[in-house]
Amino acid sequence: MDRVSSLPETVLCHILSFLFTKDAALSSVLSKRWLNLWKLVPNLDIDDSIFLHPEKGKGKRSEIRQSFVDFVERVLAFQGDSPIEKFSLKSTTIPVHPDCLNRWICNVLQRGVSDLDLFIDCTDDDFNEEGKDLPKELFLSKTLVKLRLRSEICVDWYYRGRGASLPMLKSLDIDSSLIFFNGEMKDFLPSFPVLEELSMTNMEWREMDITMSSASLRRLSLHGTGCEGGKRFQSPKSVSFDTPRLFLLNYSDAVAEDYPLVNMENLFQARINYIVTDKVIKQVRAPNDDWSDDDDEGNVVLRFGNVVKLMYGIQNVQNLYFTANTLEVLSLCCESMPVFYNVKFLELEGDEGRGWQAIPDLLRNCPNLEYLVIEGLLHYVTDKCGDFCDCIARADKGRSLTSCPVTTLEIRGFKGTMREINMIRHFLRYFRCLEEVWILPKEDGHTNFENPGVFELVEKILNLYDELSSCDVVFVVDNHMRRKWIEQSSLQV
Image (cartoon, rainbow, N blue to C red; front, side, top):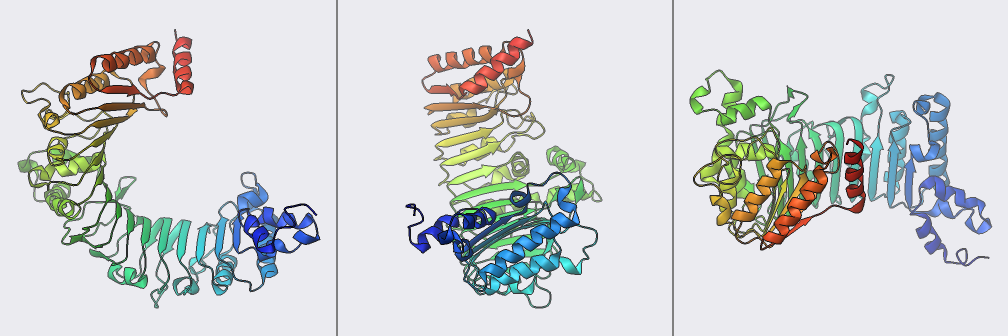
């Protein structure tokens, strides 16, 4: 007998638990010692693509689908009623009838599963709406600690007529094409009295006043539908956060009319992304007298001032991230923006269709900032960002930089344009406390580096900046990308 086979049964089962269930089952052919070990593994990881390696369209053949169903049925039957800790099921390449999926889910729930990861797709035309409902047992489990649900179909979370009760659940992650709630959000979170992590992607609100209230929640990630493909989904009238223990917030949604309560006194990190249309952005930049009473977009913009309530609610944060859309929205409440005394790390996003009007006031309101990240230097030029960037000439150019205590500047998505190079020179001149500047080029998509001689010229300029500046200027390019750009430019000569 080999040394591995002589290990205790519990150790061998632990080793097998790291394999896909199909591979663990294949171990039964090794010897009599291994014949039934895989049946005792407390973790099942079933992936239809690993099981069949199907070609495109192959998974829709009835015999292929049936062979996958038979495999899962045998695995569950072999294990009987033995306890199970984790069950991971991916069924997207081979659509399986909801009756089968629900039967498998109920099987592991009855066996006390604590970690459930479902990635399912029931999009065949012969599946009716009734068959797409998740089993009621999923909403009433007394053992689930972690639940991850990913689906290509719309998920209707509430078990109809009964609500939900998962007293042990600590982590809930729902990512589907769309999430509906048959009830109010104020009744949703109380279903999970010990929940610590909540992530929901593609929500559609069915109520106008949303309250996220939880005494246990530590991590919250909300991604609403906002505007999708030019179509506007209904956004809530008000959103409240009563989450005193929250440590991390990732919030992406349309701008609500009001944020009446924001209780996040222990927040450490926040990422805010507002989903807005180009038409709304145009209204943000327009004078107030250009908004008519019957202009829906203009009326929406007039309510953006209440965003400052959310800013005051997160002002204890230490790490802060704003997208390009959010910076545009914040431009309407610059004068009332709170002071972020605890912010040490700030990340801002640039976009050629979005402006930086809010950045000067934002930097002035981060008096203890140490690390600044700018993702993309190119942005829409307005007359209100001039004392931050080098876009237009003005008497107070660079004023917001001179008082900023930032010591490290990181520039990501650098494309190698002269406008960006001039911006870097501007930062080196006006940021008085800079010690390090890290410049990371954009590796995917079009850049200026594909043009003949550009990469060598940019590298030479940045090396010169490093020699002449009192801080370290580092152009972070690996050898692979350097060779790629030099070869591409030489081919075009």
